[in-house]
Image 1 (tube, rainbow, N blue to C red):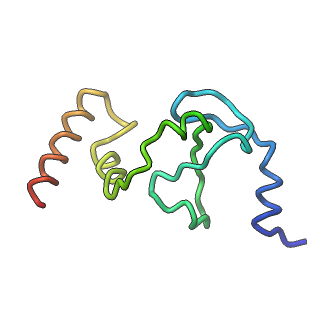
Image 2: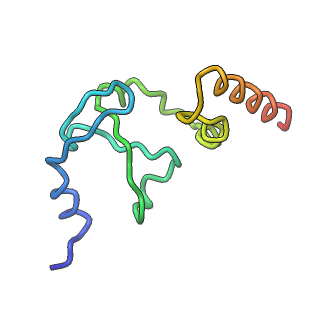
Length: 99
């Protein structure tokens, strides 16, 4: 039997996921998908991170064009805090000078 998007979602509804903001574990149905590349509708070959509903409500939902790429380029999650912040600030200054 071929699975449709709706049956795949139901199959995963009892899955446990961890909120990337607060670290709590929740049932998948009590969480919101987060796609750091900004295209959560293109699901082919993707894995998603999750936010619990309270953390999702606290997020700023304003346009953030280019922000994720700057975070990745600055080494977010892969380098120490001081290095990341220095790189991030340098990239932001460079980006603002280009506009």
